Image (cartoon, rainbow, N blue to C red; front, side):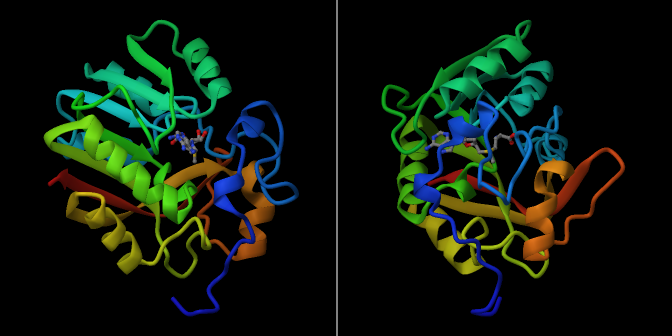
Length: 233
Ligand SMILES: C[S@@+](CC[C@H](N)C(=O)[O-])C[C@H]1O[C@@H](n2cnc3c(N)ncnc32)[C@H](O)[C@@H]1O
């Protein structure tokens, strides 16, 4: 990508995600109306990882939001824990998935203290790329502590490609790969997929930044996203 690749003027470190779960605008004037990732079903990438046999043992859904991914995994028979920094998200997720056996907790991905050596698999559905660079490093290290030796990490990360999401939510591939390796994880596979969002929430943003959003007739968009498989070193 060129130096002139689209860039959003947003400080990821200061975004308050509670706002969006309480009915406010995540990025005022740009991302409007509702929770932009609330497609009310599991992400296609989450299902693709299941098709590939990429979940085992106790699965952690990191930055679960409204937890439709965690719910899908619980329905598949996995033991699932799911956390988010937003207490409102966790409250709403608990209500939405009342009948399911999911261990929910409010937690900061950059710390995860009290969860050492617990998880066999981690699903990151669009958490890593909403953190700033310092927090991405802390997060991957925290995940390393919270997982067991040989654990698997499955990530959905916006791809820094023409027509993809702008920086800082997308990260050049070399930076992304180095960051994951520095966090103690070895990438074993990286393929292009998509992340689905709510078309009406993202319309202004998509137009302004020229995102190739592949809208469908279900009020969803589908933006280029890496499906990354990694293993704890
Ligand atoms: C793009 S949303 C994805 C939500 C969900 N994984 C999904 O796919 O629908 C990112 C989520 O990460 C959460 N988040 C942001 N920073 C966090 C942090 N430091 N620790 C835990 N969760 C965080 C936000 O509250 C938000 O729910």
